[in-house]
Length: 401
Image 1: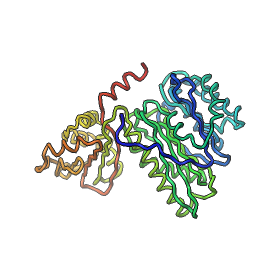
Image 2 (image 1 turned 180 degrees about the vertical axis):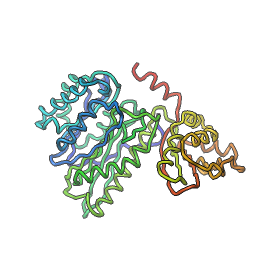
Image 3 (image 1 turned 90 degrees about the vertical axis):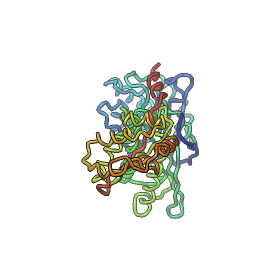
Image 4 (image 1 turned 30 degrees about the vertical axis):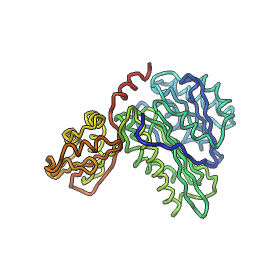
């Protein structure tokens, strides 16, 4: 189940080849092993989970990213290799070493990624046995297969591209992402890989990635939970020879990256486990962005509000509850609340013109905006979330069975 349409269209990125294979982790010949290959001289930026239980591949990946320019990403789905201790780190390093022996790259030029069940030993032999097949399948057109191969509880791949002109030449950005549950990233998303054929230095790429993540992957939540494996990577191959890190080119690139990452982030929420609604929570009129986000996440993560959304119930009392518990100083006599263009609350009380049928009509829609205006400042923020359905409970109750 997913909310709204999605596209599987994309553009190839010069200097990037991909492959996907079934190594048996997920069973039933499902695609579960993905390989990215980047041209010599490519530059990569990355951001990772802030969880204290960061998975073994995250620990290895952080270190490798500091040691060398990345030539390969090796990604498995179905097993997170998280909470596996020193053995998990050794397993992740072993996968990098096996790939380096096959490709000629140094082990530190390989970054490992894993997603799936936490606490289980990684099936290293199944991964290494599949390396010949996955390496032989490398091709620049395999983006959609890669987007499928990194999925776990996702029901559809998330993929999109952006193109723009610099000095009369087309620059391309393409990205994929996975994630459907355990989503309040606190850095990025569960897994996301973005590449451009523009040329940029690492300082610019890191800054661009952080800025875009802050307004996309760091503004979504499905259930308020942060994964142990969250990773978001941005690679510039330089295949076009066009610099994207200075002047107007940098501004144009940043805008395109912002747009692409927000589309991927929205795709995760639209495909949230059991979702039937895509919900924007807009909070404005606060003294600070921090206050806006506290209120927005208080609303977006409330099980009572999320179940009301699933039931198409315009229970504005639950919204009031969530605003009140956010821990933000406020004058409640100034607060207005809307669903869509229907005002539920005016100056801290029920709008005298509000009619239940009008609110119910908005709540029946697949895409809903909840707006809270404190009328006490100039700051505004938006967070995107989903409803909470019976299917969310079923999916997570049955996840390991």
